[in-house]
Picture 1 (cartoon, rainbow, N blue to C red):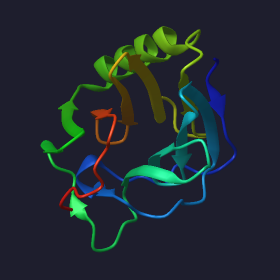
Picture 2 (cartoon, one colour):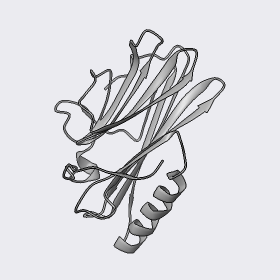
Picture 3 (cartoon, rainbow, N blue to C red):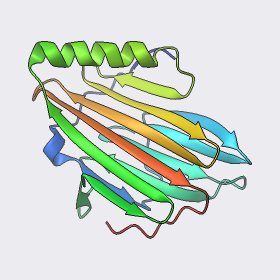
Picture 4 (tube, rainbow, N blue to C red):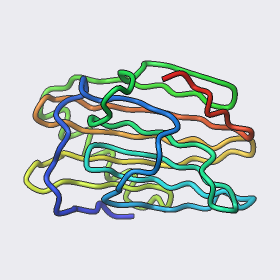
Amino acid sequence: MTVQEISVAFADVRAATLRWAVGLPERVALVTRTLEVGHGVVVDLRVLGASHQVLVRDAAGDVLLSETVACDLPGAAAMPEQIGAPGYDFTSGVERLEADDLVARVDVLTSSLADDPDALVVSFPGVPHAVTALALRRTPDAISWESWHAYPQTGELVHTTTRATTGVSTDVRN
């Protein structure tokens, strides 16, 4: 997996504008990576114009879980530091870094995901180190994914981690 530069302008503003929602319908994606995780379940890692969405689908293509982290979600909850429900756990954090430190962290991140077949890394034109990255992880009883959103203009690096198990509940309170 190499970093994919897209021709869409960087739209995110800063970490504080990110919102989180579970159960939203599929949104228009700029780039999607679809990964099979077994038993007919697939995960779509999707980079949106305003951050990301992950869809977990069953063998029939029906959405079992939709998680969206984006800055254009009117009415959605502010991104929580931690939230959980039966079969679903989400955590997030924001690091504030000096410009050189952010560049170094983004370089390490993109290098570490470069050969990962379960990762999606997207960069935006005209804003060096403005990156959205997602990586899927599998265990026998769960799937998990991480996301990173780099905001060079504010020196912020957002990191989220989600873990979903069999029997995922979409009854997560936004």
